[in-house]
Image 1 (cartoon, one colour):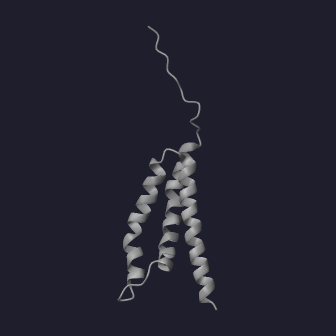
Image 2: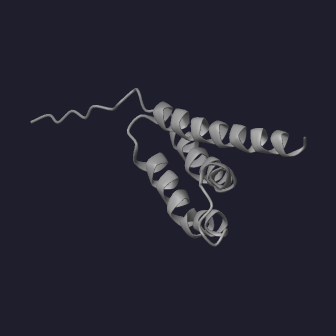
Image 3: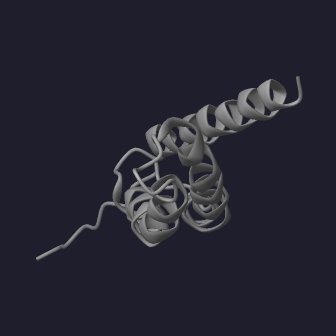
Length: 103
């Protein structure tokens, strides 16, 4: 009886490192940018501090959501698109807010 094993040629040696970079530094940078960008689109509460406190309280959930999404998504390119898209969106919101406040 002969047993043959099939190796997947599509698995590249760079894939684990690409996923580590996405789930580590990129998820951290994106979650920090989302923390700052949330201050722009979240309306202030009655006390005037909810738009500051709520992103800080939700930061661990934002980071863990991005981290686990980057780890468990089957398509690595889709994870990069989502994380970099969120990063660019919130950096744009921050830049627009800063440009508007200087006038």
